[in-house]
Length: 114
Length: 115
Image (cartoon, rainbow over all chains, first blue to last red; front, top):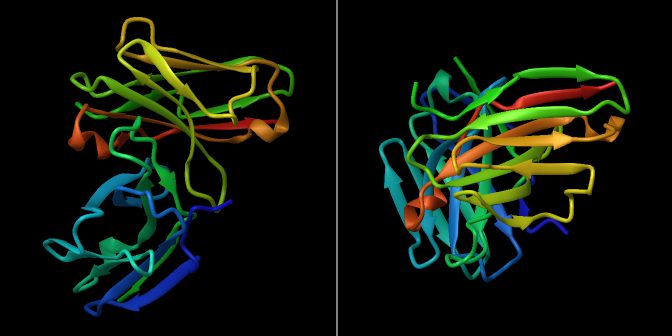
């Protein structure tokens, strides 16, 4: 069973516009959510996170929104830049007192068009 | 370089051979994780160490897989009698304890190809 779902395998956005990446989850016990970015031939790089007690976290061009009732989170990147082209993974932490094992989505490939 | 390093970056082996991968975490991180990633999927958790203690193993980790972290620093992941289904990217990550430990720092991965 896939507890974290990223239903869009790819997304193409014009440079300068807003990129919105979506993630849905099924487990209401998830305590913490993270977004990672991955370039080819590199490991994932942490981007931004959000606790389940919040509904928004912002860091520069990146904002993550959490809608707990809908079990949905999204990552907004504005303005989008060519260097943002990468695969973006949504990940969740089941419990804060656990081993912090991350449950991952399948990823969304973001392509920023010049 | 203070990031997570993994060696080798690529490994090609024949079915039935044994392989061993190494991970060097960020020096002050006491938590170390191994994940496996196949094409088009997110990483799947394999196992987790806190210092030298292996605290959790996924059911994905068959008895052909063994991981060690003998002194609480670097870790090795060994696969015995490799099968073609073992072909994947093997990722290592490390983190600190506490809330900040949610942010796991990943190495570049070891890509294994079993022929």
